[in-house]
Image (cartoon, rainbow, N blue to C red):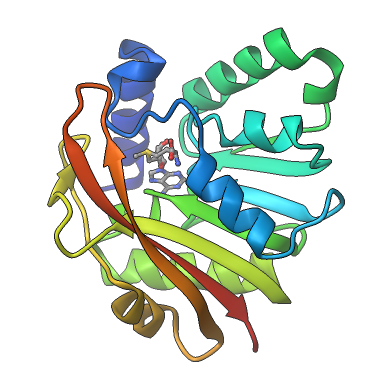
Length: 211
Ligand SMILES: C[S@@+](CC[C@H](N)C(=O)[O-])C[C@H]1O[C@@H](n2cnc3c(N)ncnc32)[C@H](O)[C@@H]1O
């Protein structure tokens, strides 16, 4: 899928569907939040949510007192929705959040983060060149010693999401993809219930960047 059509796809999703009309909606991003805390993140840690879309993870992080949160997504509409929701219920504490509209495979990180979180964005990269570009950004945007928390569909998860094909991973195949610079610390399966109560198997994996 070309860059423009990829962006057009996601803008269309977020301008035509409500927050809880998409399969990946979660009322609370508890599995991600728990792993971020378990990775040792402190209030000052720099945390980026890659492909964060309109996820409520940013709300959960700000509510927990995290002060340096960035959300990156291809869709400006998704980030605008998240931002306005956050401002309406958290007021001034929402002002510190950084919003980046970008394709992660083209983005040039301007700083290194302590935690790189991605739930259901990486798995859309089915072209090896896009995956290589993503991993180059991961290396540029995550400090050595920092943690990458990546959730994809598990090997027995759906083959498509939002009408697009996905690549499915367990922790071993994801670790192999990321390369030797990333050491697997923890992995867990997660059964996600969609808003229409079907079940999707995710695999969450936590890696430490070592080189
Ligand atoms: C299935 S949604 C998941 C959203 C969010 N992470 C969550 O858990 O609710 C996938 C998200 O990845 C974003 N995305 C897809 N490809 C991307 C890319 N190449 N760069 C940045 N964001 C991307 C989409 O716009 C969408 O918001």
